[in-house]
Image (cartoon, rainbow, N blue to C red; front, side, top):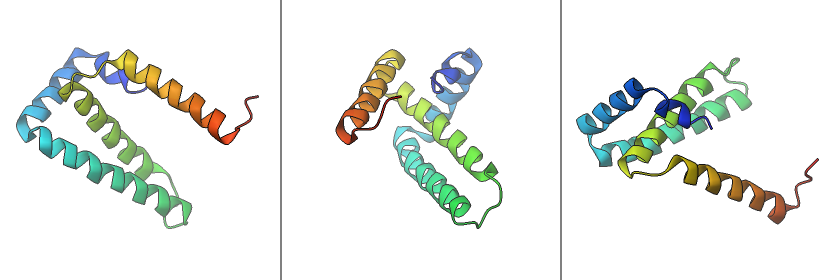
Length: 102
């Protein structure tokens, strides 16, 4: 999964840990909310024709991924467990909304 990319490189894990220590857990949780809002705004701007490229979406999704990785570290969440839950939730969407699987 894409989030696992950050854990593949010890230098990235170390940098993320330093960011957490510098700003603190609560700040980073609040920051995640802000960045998700900015991602939402970037998508809406693109979809409504205010932006001609999706560069802003790419930048904002990178911010969200970095903060998700920090949250994962802060709360010692298991990557494989997250992946299992994601797959389970995706299957649930298919079942609940009768999405054709073809």
